[in-house]
Length: 309
Image (cartoon, rainbow, N blue to C red):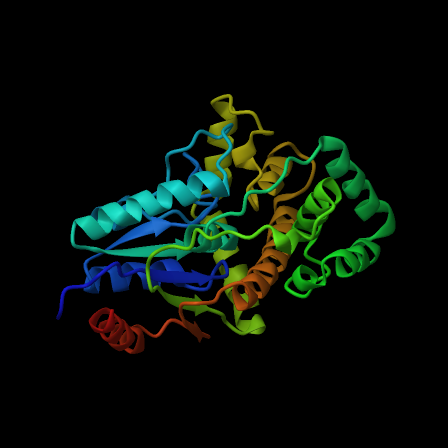
């Protein structure tokens, strides 16, 4: 095999799509190290509920940007951009292949394309938009976005509340289209992007099973132990999918069965947003979309990719 120059394997996908297991097996075959693009696995102590790789898996293959952040700390896409690029350069310098793996699409996108320099936005603008969303619904706000920035509006779903509020806050603060704030900080790597995109019915079954498995593995005990140690239930880290519901069950606000049902519903809603993002937000790479992980096929693809670059 010829000398590789700046390879990068990106493996994205919804929660419960099998991306972590696939990444581990491919990293073993191709001298890889995994850079986690998961905005929740970075937090300490949240092991079961974030499906964090086990200690054995971390001993087998180096994993980066997991298990390092206190529960009350904020970690941003901007910090991830700098940390991930630095670590990927270090991995390449060791003669290994970086695998950027996760379901936090904005983290992956920031690492690949950089982030635009956005103007400051006042808290009053953000709060007003939140009130408008709650009282008037997303249709009117999306109509405003279509009017003021049709280019960006066509890239997001009308129900994508996060990006709707974010873009409109910048537009109202600057009186310029959100899409006018460009970045020229694309990563200097011809990456291969593998997106695991299971059919919805299969994904629903996987999410329900994974939720049951995590509860059986001691998820409730994990949360109870953290609360018993004095961690604030309102900590930023606890704003992770499923943890609030388990805290509510421990506090007697809802039953554990109700918590499980809510977690499954919320996870399905989150997975749907992930699918929309990964189908529409990436370009300029070599993109593969697969319904399920196919190790043998992808092994052949990766061999060809690494020979090509």
